[in-house]
Structures are given as C-alpha cells and as structure tokens.
Image (cartoon, rainbow over all chains, first blue to last red; front, side, top):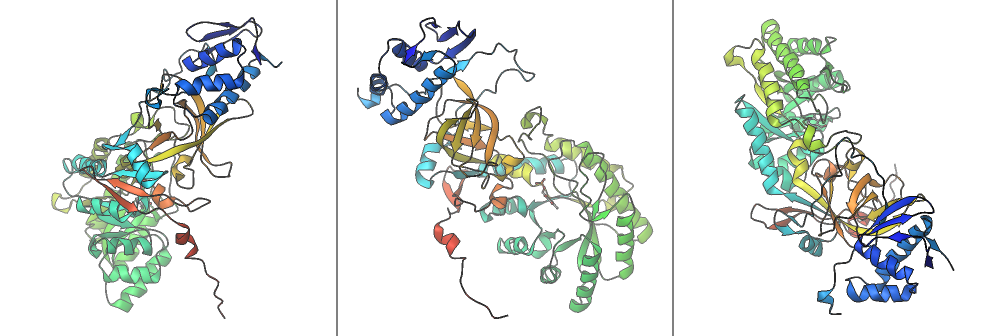
Length: 81
Length: 451
Ligand SMILES: Cc1ncc(COP(=O)(O)O)c(C=O)c1O
C-alpha cells in the first residue's frame, strides 16, 4: 500500500490529487494516518501507534482503518503493491 | 500509555471538498451534544435501563399543558382539555394530564376502560371513533359519558339502547367540514357543507331519545395554519346557533378536536418544525375570535373542548439509541445502523426527527443515512442527516418522540424497550417495563376448540 507520490497534503489536513483534480479535507487523525501511509508503514504498525495514544481498541481502529484505506483507493490516491 | 491520559478517539475522515454555496437555509444544522435528560445523565440511564430507551420529562409535559391552558383561558374562560388517549395511553402520562385537569378522549373500549382505571369519572370521558361496540356504548351511557356519533348505524343502535336502558344517552354529533386546507377528513362524522350534519341534528331532536349536548369536529392532524381552526370554529358556532334558533336546543359545548402541530419537522418540509409550528396563542386566538363572532347570547356561550394530542407530549420525550455499526453504500455514502428501528419509532415515517449525539464531538461531520436494526429495507430513521463521526457504542438522542410512538409501536423482530420518566425532582421512574420473551410467548397457546 502506497500513497501516490504526487499527492499534496497540507499540515491543516487539505489534500489535492492532481491526477483527478479533486481536493479533500482530513481530520487530524486522518492526517496522522495518511502520513504513516506515505512513510509506507505496515498496517500493524499504524494500528499499534494509534491504539497506544488514543482511547480505542485495536479491533475498532482496524475496522475504521480498512474503511479509510478503501476510500483512499476509491479516490485514486493509493496504489496496491 | 496510561489509559486515562489517552486522546479521545475519532475515526479518520477524508471528505471531498465541494465548493458549494451555503444552501437556502444557510449552513448545516448546528448540533450540541445532549448529555442528560432533565439533569439525569444519558450514560446513567442507559446503564440502568439499557438501550434503546424512551425517556419522558414530567417537567416538559406539565409546562406544555399549563401553557396551552393559559393561551385558551385568557381568551375564552370556559375551556376543557380532554387528553387524547391514542396519542399516548401510558397510565403515568395520562395521570399527569388528569392531575392538570384534563378529561379523557377515547376511541375504543380498551381506551375507555383505561380512562376509568385512571380514575376519570364517566362524565369526564368523551367517546369518539367509528367503531364503538354495543357493550362499549352501554357502559358509556350508564356512566354518563359523552358519546360522539359517527354514523347513522350508531345513531340507531344508540336509540335502541336508550329504550333498553331507559336512559337518554348524552351525545354530540361529529361534523366534518372544509377548512380551506388540503386535509378533508370526511370519513368521520357527518358533512357540514352538504347538509348531512344538519339533517342528523334534526333527526336527533325529533327522535327525543337523546340529550344533545355538543358538536364535535377534528379537522385533521399536524395542521400548520391556525386559520383552518378559525374557519372550522366559525362553521361549528353557526351550526350551534342554528340548532338553538330552529330546533330550540342549547348546544352546551363545541369540541374542536385535536390537530395542533408539534415541533417536529415533517418530511419534505422546507423549514424546520420549530420555526413553522403555530403557537398555542395563535390557535387560541383563531378559535376564540370565531366563537365570539357568532350570534350566541352571552349566557349561551358554549364550553370549548380541545382534544389536543401531539402538541402536548411530542417534545416531552426522547429516544436514546446506540450505534451498532458503520458501513458504506455502493456509492460510498456513510450508513450508520442504530438499535432503534421503525418498529418502535413509527413517527420516523412522517418526520425527520432531530438527532443529537450524546457525547462530545469535534467539528468534523459527515453525511449519514441512519438505519434501524431491522432486517427490512423500510427501516430508515433519517435518510439524510449530517452528524459528527460516530463510533460503535456511541449514544444518540432522538428528539420529539412522545406522541404516537409508545401507542403505535409494534413488537416486531425485537422486543419493546423500557419507557421511563424523569420527575420534576430529577427522580427516574419506570412507566413501562422492557418486554421479555415471556411477554410474547405467554400469549401464545396450542389449545384446540371444537366449534
Ligand atoms: C378525534 C380525535 N381527537 C384528537 C386527536 C388527537 O390529534 P392530535 O394528536 O393531532 O392533536 C385525534 C387524532 O387523530 C383524533 O382522531
């Protein structure tokens, strides 16, 4: 899983996808997750990092992460490798 | 990390930016978390009684009836409210209205018996409806209740019972009329415009088997224009004056039925319910002005009866519900499934109920379709609603659910939940226990009858 190299993300959570011309907003945890995806962190590492700092269980967050990743794919920001 | 120091979790959100102008009604609805009901925390209520859970506010209920009475009595002193049992016939709710001086308005033998059990005296019960049985009528005649005649078959049945019991039943005639709005409820009673109502009044007086006491109408429900009541009251008052002049009978009361709108938002309505719902003052002004305009002698001014239902109880209750799961539609739209469905929230077929989260949330919202838990496509609580990011286990408060739900709900797929009431002192009492499997199977049987 890799975020396309040409995706621009601002610190405030604004994303622009030059490939489709669409822009998106993220909430703060969305920014954190997308940064970890940019760094090509594996799913397990992302889950561990979030669960360590937020009041959420691993299974609840894993479920939300799957949903988030599936949207990134729909929005053509992610390539499977 | 120490779990008490952890950051409040919110789902990661990515949302397309649509550079749209604010809509006609401005920006999205602004929500605040609803953490308690009259001071009792939602979390404590759910912990004790489970979810879903209906919660009624005694304070709000009493405020409503007191405000409605004030609006009318300051304009027209001879007023009685009769609580519409079908709107909510839980004893705990009815008793508060009776304590506040309301009579009972019932439409079946079952509701009639409930009113009697609640201590309402027979001569304070108004018996409406198209389906009163012979036994119901006998009971009502014997108790001196006011029977509102719906059709000719009922009139003749009452005439026979009058002979059988040697009592003259106290009756009123239900009149249906055109009030210049779309709703014309002409399936109940006798029509004003085509002369049916006048004919039946003449017949009643001629038969000399009844005490003709009143005239009744119920022009429809959720009537958003007070003017409709002005039209109805004018016609009813003129009919009463004609009965006096031409038939020599004094009509003692005009019953204008129910139908005042509540603060809910009707589906497909452009503006929110709280903004378009006329006040009790506006309805009272329309009705009392019309009666004063009619040619009554001051001494003959009739008592005014009102059978207001939903406007008195809708906003005195909420339904607490819990998020079961989040998923996406084929187009990526957020679907959220909660544990309260249309089986207990019948009114979600008519209203876009306001929904508030019951825990703090951030400024991030998403567009959601809110589904109930039933395995049925029709089980939709809100088709389009903007809500903060909800997690499984979060609670929602669905507002303005006090009218018609805990009487029209059905036991379907799941069992009906607890109904509780928060008293003015902040104490919680159970109005109706949660159903168990025994509630259901105890009614089932396998006996055989030889007929
Ligand atoms: C005869 C009669 N009276 C009163 C009511 C109460 O109406 P609402 O809840 O609209 O005030 C109804 C409801 O349908 C009714 O049929």
